Image (cartoon, rainbow, N blue to C red; front, side, top):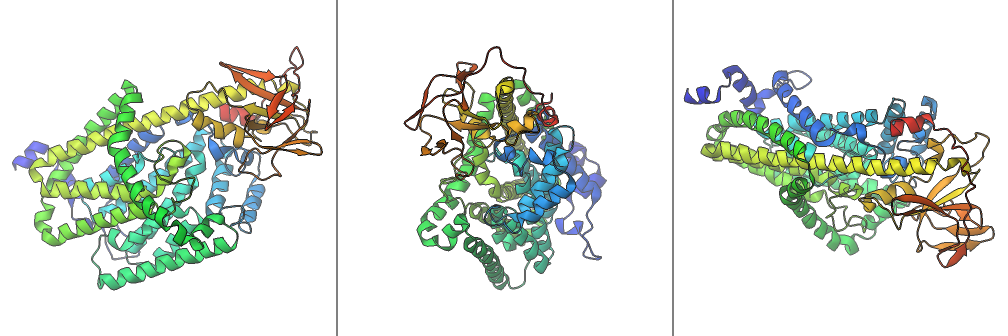
Length: 587
């Protein structure tokens, strides 16, 4: 009675939140029957954390990295629906050679880019990403609730949302990556229900959407958290099906010319040491950054209003978790050693899922998997499931075994969640600043557009960038935004080739060709994309201090002297901005 008075939680609400996990579901009928009030309480916290930690400033985000490329953001704004379907149709015949073995992922991305591109601003595109994350977190909560109390399942779902090592999660180009997480969660829920055929079919969709989310499925028998008959035999069959499915898809990709798959199918022995290193370094980076690096970075770079907001939200969650965890603390006494063993099995599965997610992180771009900033921090994306379930299961075990320390455990948990929220706000501020700098560059360049002619090449020297974080900006404009100007500026429709923007510096390779100098930029595209320049037929743009200048004196590129084009004075009136410009730049 004293506990009821102390925590002031209504008995009916307490019963709803802390009933045994298995009693939440009914095996009668075709679908699971879940207590909607209980999941509603969880959805409130999931939606709130997701908004504050990842999308609080979404209205000030822009386009980054591959968002500039045609399958992502800009071109679909021009398409009609039949055009979009045609692009999807062309994806599948070229699924290996051009679409990285991920035809379903690119098809879904084209649809999202098309529909969100028809809306008034980019914020609607970020709203789509919000919806994907919200769905995944709810599915994770439902999955975890089968073998955890309400409080533990909620902690797991919240950890997934604000997973600190992945600082790239909100980028528009990554929306289809997280749809692969949706397939993974559906597959795990089906596996949990013993719908094995459907579980394996849905999990296989991850391999043609984004394969990193297929890897944690290796631990499905452990993660399911339900008793199994003949567990060793079932685990062996699962591993056989898992690796055969992966082998078939990787084999098809390798035969089709995908060099990344060939590194596994043909070079597994040479790359095995790096794979083993990656599965150790990756989880260690997750834990080290989450519990030390990210909180300190957020405190060092964050602003006090964000910290106060995080503390207030964390404090409110502490009250809820403390009340929720106290009744759950008696569950271990009821379940005995068998329940404790089930918790440990799920914890082991979470560790395996987190480690195995790094098996593909052996390629030079991602190895070692220690990057925690920018797009390349997406190397950790597959580990989010294992990490979040591990935190949830540790929280559950501690609250069930250390009943007198429940308040301390809840306080420590919400303390870290608040610090992660604060760090998430800091990451959002970086995105805001990066986009503000990119937008400033594009607007400055567009003021010169009246001087541009049909087919002009504009070379940008980024060696003197005045911006805060060159590493985040440089790839977004010069190497992937070379066609962006034609979407921002309404050049004459009679022109066959609009001006294009490319990044160079003194070390950029170049070849002499009959009609000029071919510049190897961007280096990750083939020669068909590389620009050809000649004396007086290109512009050379460079920052001096905080000012953007057009250089009209001879320059040296890869040992060759070339003379840029001169600007006429006074400057001609710039061309008009497009509707896409107004959507992207909020003008």
